[in-house]
Length: 129
Image (tube, rainbow, N blue to C red; front, side, top):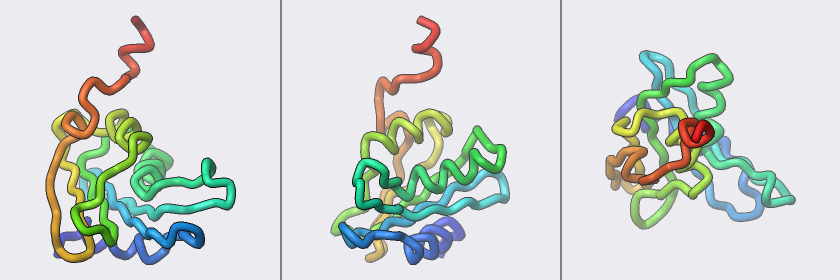
């Protein structure tokens, strides 16, 4: 089992999901550092945070802004897919061709890239237009 998969599965165990009961875990690699995160729900649903963003924000909070790899896992039939908000955040902190692995707890996975997840992403370059 890969280090990222192990970290994402462990993070998933800490998901706070009293409303949806849909636990997701994620892990980010930067060099030899691993940052993980789980989804955290709130009674005010708009204030909830996805596992992908939890892991990314943990890495950014530690001073890393050029992230290298992301692994996301959930109990879904097919490999889990990030929501639109997560896709935008992924495009901000990963190179367009970075490895993003989407997986489920049954052992299925697929690799993709930020570019494939969100073609034509809005970026900081668009702010200078």
